Every structure is written in structure tokens, then in C-alpha cells.
Length: 459
Image 1: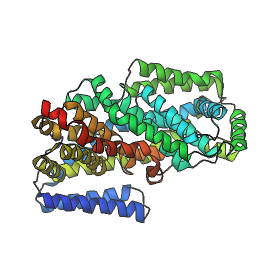
Image 2: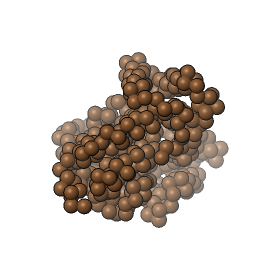
Image 3: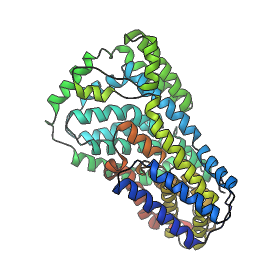
Image 4: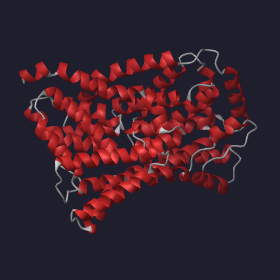
């Protein structure tokens, strides 16, 4: 059931105490002291190592847990390297500047946040990847929000909400396929079923973003200044749209994200070699260090100075630390103890679904990895749902509602660290406005006691 076998069996009370202490430690350092998440995560690793040694777990086993935990995120780590290259190559090919420029042509101040949310949702469903959506159209929308004097926190919340709506509803999404596969539900039956909670969350979020949107006249002159400065960069050409088209085509044919992003980045780089006026040596340097704009309009310089492998190193280092930390939570038996105790105490349908959601959220908070959140929670609760005669699709829906969408709300999680880095907005800043991500688990918990109580009795 668990990817790393525990070498100790702590009591439930002991596991709960550690859970509370670890969360309090991380929260204190990030919220109160304002440190980077690396520091409390590293201190948490020290504490868990000391705990393991006290409990007579060998250092070799602890080290193996640390390594195995980090290994689960290696796929994401390599993808992050490529996303850094994608952003820098899309900058010099003019793809991101073109997206920003087009956005200014169509988007005024009216319903700005709602439109950002809706467009990001559509692109998210098309691409099937919340991270790729955020790193491309999300970066463009952050620039537009700044130019329109809109709240960057709310704009980021709308981007994250839309990207993760797409991540839930797209048949191309890794997490959507994972949730249906782990539980054993047909993919399209799963998507149809999660719409019961996802569509209400979408509608409520859209209304909230529309109500919060600025007035029509806000920042439009500033927007025109951005457009003029973007044109003066000389980056925007008809070829600027081709890397985006390549990515969409790859996504349509369900080519893996790693390969799709690599192909789009290479095409963007080839086009840039002919249109940007940059030497080849400069282009390869931009792959590593990112693009630096030098227009006469400083806000555009800040907007376009992004990307590169180097920009991803902060994210990658934190992901490795956080997942290694999660591995230690397994090998010391803390997470297995909590999950096993949950299985034994569940009796009625509402408590089962609420506990499923709470477990998925808890794994996200403790480990910071949405794939493990879905896999562990799914494996833990499959037998519980079978005994209670609850349909499998209820479990797969709950995994998505509370597993997939919570990850970007955790400052030390894989998605949270990545999004904060790419958008330049801290997780705790956009968290109150990521309405869709906040509403999804709440709606699934409210929905739990009403929709399946009678159905389960007929089965």
C-alpha cells in the first residue's frame, strides 16, 4: 500500500503530536519569520532523523527513506528544467509577448479576473497541465494584471483556479488519469462524475471573480503603454504563434508533457534564431539564465525578464527537500499510522467521504506531492468504500476534489513552489483568492451526505 515500508510503528497519539509539531514549525518559519520554505523543511528533516535514531531505526534505513521520497519527484524535477527553457525560448521567439499583446487588445478592466479565470480554464482543459498553463498564459495574464493596476494576488488566484479546473476536467491530465486508474473507474465516467462538484465550484468562482473585477476604465492607458513597449522589443512576429501551435498539436496527440515541451522549446529557439537578432551563443545562454529585456519601459523589462534553467533551481531544490521529508515521514511510520487509524474508525458514508478528503489534504500538506496524495489516499480507502458499498467513482471524485486542487495552496508543495516562482506571487498571497481550489473540497464534503446515502443502500 505504501511506497516506503515503515521501520517503526508509532502510536496514533505520537503520530498526531508529530503532525501538529511539524505543521506548527513550518507555519511559524514561513508565516511569522518570513523565511524560505527550505529552512523549516530542512529542520523537519533533522527532527525526523533524530526521532528515527532514538526509535532505533538504522541510519541506512532513514537515508533510504530520504532518497526514495525524493525519487518520487524526479519526473517533476526534469519537467521543471524544461519549463524553465520553455519560458525563456517563448520569450525570445515572441510567443509570450504576443500573448500579452493580444490580451490587451481584448481585455479591458470589466470582469478582468473572471475572464482570466475562464480563459485559463479553457486552456487548462486543452493542455491538460496546470503547470504548463500557469507558465505560459499565466505569465501573460500576470503582466496584463500589472498593467491594468489590478490586484496581482487576485489575478494569480484566478490563474491558479483556472489552471486547476483544467487539470481536473481534462482527459489529457496526469492527475485525472491517475485518480481514475488508481480506483479502477473509466476515465470519462470519472470526468462526468466530478462535474457534479466541479461545475458548481466553477460557477461560484466565476461570480466571485466577476464581483471583484475592477471598473472598465482602470489602467487602460497604462495598458497601451505596455503594448507600445512590447512592439518596440522587436520580438513579436507572425512566427511567434507557431511554438504555441506546436504545443497544442502535441497535446492533442497526447504526446507526453516532457516531449511536448521539449519540441515546442526547440521550435521556439529555431524561430528566435532568425527573428530575434540574437547570436546562437546568446540564445544558449538564455536557455540557462533566462531572457533579460532592455526596453525604455521598465515594467515591460520586469515582465519579460524571466525563464531559464537557473530560475527553476530554487523550485527544484525545495521539491527535493520536501519529498525527502515525506519519505522520512513514511519510514518512521508516522503517515502509515495516521492512515491506518483512519481506516479503523470510519463507520458512516459522510465520515468516509469527509475523511477521504481530509486525508488527501493532509498528505498534500505533509508531503507536498499531489500524485502521492491521490495514490496513497486511493489505496488506503478502496477497501473502505467497497465494504460500505459506495461506488468507486465517488472515491475517484473525492481524490480529485481534495487531492489535485490543494497542492498549489501549500507553500512547500511541488505545485505551490513552482507557481510562486513562475508568477512571482507567494502562495500565501494568492491563496485567499484561489476560489476554485478552496471551494472544491468544501463542496465535495457538503455533497457527501446527500448524494450517495440512498444509492448505497440500493447496491
